[in-house]
Amino acid sequence: MMPPTHLRGKSLIIFHAILYAGLLNLSSATDGADDRVDEEEYQALVQAFENGRREYVAAFRKAKTEAESARAIAEKRPDEKRFIAGFLAIAERDPASPIAAKAANWILTHTPFDPDPKAVEIIASHHVTSDAIGPLCQAIGFSTTQENGVLLRRILERNPHRQVRAAACIGLSQHLLFVGNRPSRTAKESGSKRAIAMQTEAEMFLNRAIAEYGDVQQDGRLIADTAREILADIHTHGIGVTAPETEGRDADGKRFKLSDFKGRVVLLTFAGIWCGPCKVMYPEERELVERMDGEAFTMLSVSTDAHVETLRASIQSREITWRCWWDGGTGGPICNVWNVQRFPTIYVLDAQGVIRYPDTRGPDLRTAVDVLISEITK
Image 1 (spheres, helix red, strand yellow):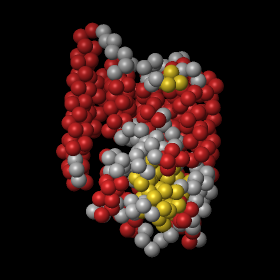
Image 2 (spheres, helix red, strand yellow):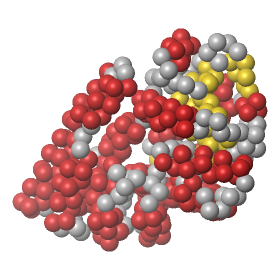
Image 3 (cartoon, one colour):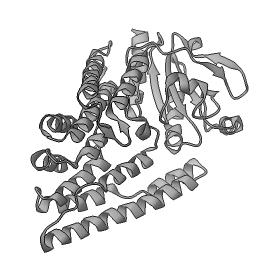
Image 4 (spheres, helix red, strand yellow):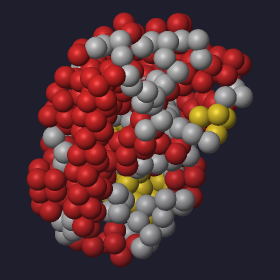
């Protein structure tokens, strides 16, 4: 499912930073005093957000405990709603202007999971043919909202620039995969027929990207290479694929295999203490493990910490309450078998060892587990 590796390998914080960098390439041409004022206001907002983001990243990286991480999020993370309001005010003054395109792009690129409908409308109505919305297509590909899916299709159909259409084609394929992976969308069909149909449509757009835009460069690599990588991941680790056998040693050196847990729903994560977003998920994962006690459910994780002592300490402190393979780093043998490119990576397997929900988290993760447990107890 998979976004390009250079994006997928970053935390959400770094992901936002990359997107911010992409926005710097947007046209900044302005005319007249009003345009200059809007441009100055836009740049001031961008700088304020970037300064706040730097402080947040520094505080988060400094955090040694879950409490310190939570404090960094609560006290240092920039208030995106406040910035969205500021950028939207700029965009709404003259929605057809270049500065409006920049402001709306900022909003949608920084909040792809919960897009502001006014920002979507500004792009869809006034800037769908712009040559500067490639970064936007990349960002909203990570979204599951219907509005962003419609916008990507419109850009692909109407934009005259191959570079942008290439980004839209890849973005739309990713969007379809993300939507299809949501259990709230597929739970009514036990065979995940809707998810498989959306995965099939995503493959169609990926093949189109190879055929029509394969020679286009995006972020230093060919669109064809990005599309082929996503296709390969679908074929080896997509919905409906039997999970590859996974074998290794735990923190105490004892060997165990994924197939040891056949007949149980398995939550499989690839994570590490070094990874901020992974640690943020630990409390929720501990709660899930506790809630599912007594059910045919097992959580397993592939630890990518460089030193096994780091994993042992986390287990001893009860930060981690599930069994882990220690893979010796992010390029370990188990990560290579699964072609893991970003952390955390998450899969939910059914009792037959089939991948049913890739990259599911939050409330969707709990729903996915409940759906698969209910299949066992029918």
